Length: 638
Ligand code: ADP
Image (cartoon, rainbow, N blue to C red; front, side, top):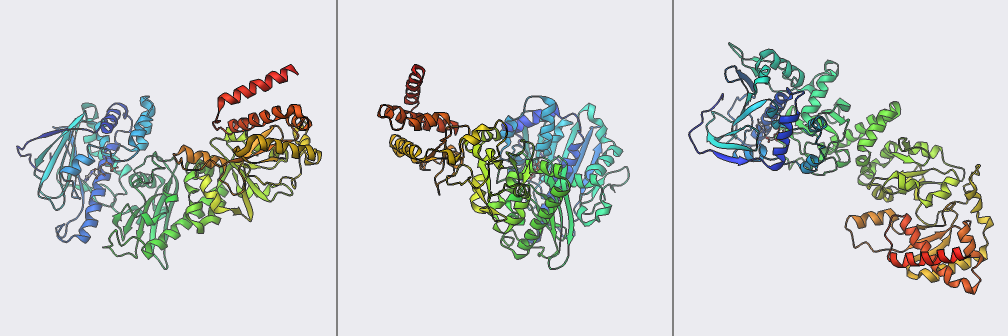
């Protein structure tokens, strides 16, 4: 213990939250490689604590003694086999101590822990991405002690734990505000008290920390980091490793940055940005309450990591910092809302991110595809949130399509380039997985004509499509919507593609088809909005489509699944394929009075079939199978 003596006050023993106990268990038993990161984590926390206090002191007079220099002190004790990291930052009160070092507040933690496989090596890699922060010191510690006093408080607190199940808290003393973390090392980890080892770790992981890191030597302490904010240095003077370490620090993540954007903007507004796009998606990407957004600094002073207006939510995967020259230092968080400077910075940053993404997409399409798999679904949110960026975003979106395999992504430019003669729209189908979409009967007519259909499987697709309407004046059109006129696109009659030829409008027996439509309508009644003959089918006998102006089939199902039970069950349009041999048999017998009942039954069975193909439940499965058996029996009887 470097600072403060423990008064003989009552010690209180508290249990770790179940999630923390799980994480600690993993840390103790699985994190054997890269143990040195515990020091990086402690330094990172100390630096954050100083940043927080520096900001708070700007608006709270008297909180900080005049002339206070922030610093992080590292010292070791050979006899105790301990290493201590002390800061003069914001510190913690008793409640914060229990909250911060006894629970994991991040939402999604339980789900993340449940997703671990039980395979120690794999789990260790995952837990690295999750970021265990302070708890990582238990990979090397027998015991950890934290002595802390919150800025502005009189009381100080001691927290101790061996990382197994529980921790204790008692009142103590500390000369000034801050936190002192002492790690009592396990025998096998005694290397971490060696001076050169510590120096190397700090150089590797923490050189970018802008607060001086001092290492206590025999006579005096010496500074072991460069101590200037990384983003203030010239790009050419920063190594890739240094960027990476800064990214880890600022983003609380541990993968490599996929893209690094370090720029200084001069002119109407002046700022520096050092932004990163991760190479793997964070576990809580889809959680809108996720912490650690882009951090805002003003003239090198940390202001907040919670400035909502700095980055749009559809770029929430971007990490890093923005350092503004134009905002006042004592800017309050309230002042940041709807702030003109912040809004300008935001729009400039969005443009810059778009520009860089486009560059990557053009120059390194394979790398861009990886980005797209990770963050495409999030970026697409911009298509309905940010009207002004439609055009830029439409250049960046990628899709699976019927023209390629699931690994091949196409851009809208490529799609338009490949459009068929007579094709005026961009066709798409939405659903849960590419496999089921590829098997949809509604695609048949498009494939017979070689017309490409985009396969959209992200839930968000249902929402941006109505908002965007068109790309280069080509309207987005769902193949499950009715009223698509395929007749202008010529069929490709390939060898073995007989279906396409068979279902040709010119070959239909129009009078019989009209009668069959009537017979179907009579049988199906309210269950359908309409019955139509269609040339979109080649192999299947029937399919369902949404009526003009109605909600798309997939969207209806999706909303229902999400519990929107109030979505009215809109009746759909049943389309049949007059070229199909079964339908032909029905049209042939449509005038025979004796077949009237069979046709009525067939209509009901075919309708239920179409629903099953859509992945829907049918209303009355018992009647369905009865009718089916009945028709089969008749069929077998000839
Ligand atoms: P993270 O830093 O990712 O939030 P940690 O587990 O490392 O997670 O720390 C949890 C919290 O404990 C921090 O967010 C901070 O509020 C608090 N904390 C940790 N170290 C310190 C410190 N040296 N001074 C003040 N607060 C600290």
